[in-house]
Image (cartoon, rainbow, N blue to C red):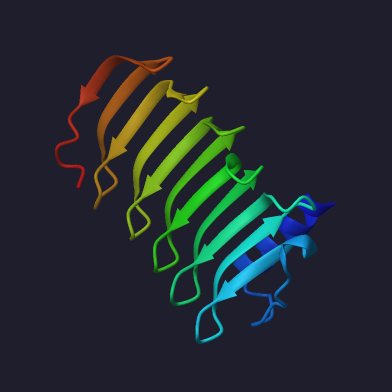
Length: 162
């Protein structure tokens, strides 16, 4: 039930459908928020009945865009997505976690929205093909192939990545 509520609020925040002012609740009520002097949200955290962060943690940039979103359990363990955004609202990077261990795809973008890195993780280590793309053009610069965290092969050169 609480997960559904968290995702509903997240969807409303992302689509701008949430009213300008959320009521501020204390930890026992399920979430709290911090607002700046202009009334814009800076941080929203969702809590369990035990008072631990259990759910989404959403931070906002000064202009009101979402700055980051992470899904936590027991205050510190990342479960699910961890997303950071640039001030202009475009995605900086996306990582996914299972019980605090990086798992699955990790992607990084330039402020213009160009994919700059695409990595794959299994049990917290790089596994499979890892890509580095040119920061401005998105052209593939380098491909590294990992097997359970061990670099097996490198194709290309990433000296022009930034």
